Length: 106
Image (tube, rainbow, N blue to C red; front, side, top):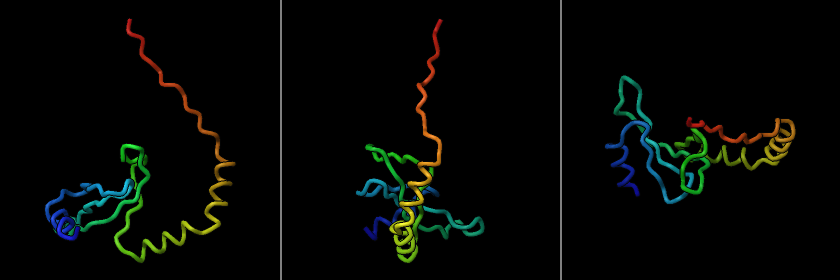
């Protein structure tokens, strides 16, 4: 795995994604600053996916170190997050899936 990641860091294009064996986890090559683009680095993107491993959102959560992961983990496991989200769901308007309009060919 380490050698694959080294090669991806060296040869990957900026913002290129590499899939992993776990759906919803991707390795992303983040470019370096404009003055030093070769100083790019790899980050782990955590993003909800559909059954085909295609992202359901435009952007996910980017992690580059274990300490940040632990902080997110603690935050997301807090009991208050569930209470807050349940209340937000009650307050937000209900999503209505409108049928797709179809062009009539005449």
